[in-house]
Length: 142
Image 1 (tube, helix red, strand yellow):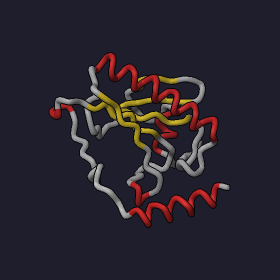
Image 2: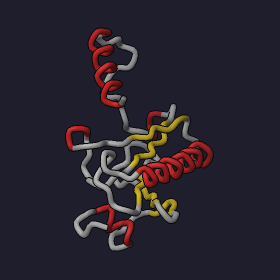
Image 3: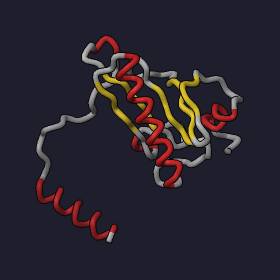
């Protein structure tokens, strides 16, 4: 674990958190700046900076834990849906550089949430540009 990492300090118990769940590989705790009622974070116990660095096994463990918690949010908190969000890099809104997955319960009752979309879904993009990006990404993955 990193001595300078906020989330490593939380996982180690050196910093306070409202623990929700824990297993051998992950730790889940409430977000102190929630986007909705019940918003929490799931982190791997082993430090990795972001999505580009996390080991596949830790990524899988975080995803499984997030799914389990999302089901609880729907069942216990009465959420009408759930967003899972990862921000990778400062320009993608990452502020703590320890991989984490936000589990954000969503509600039809907007008094329970503060999250709004940063883009307008359903507005078609440039089809030529989309095809070019897809071709370039596919070639890089072959």
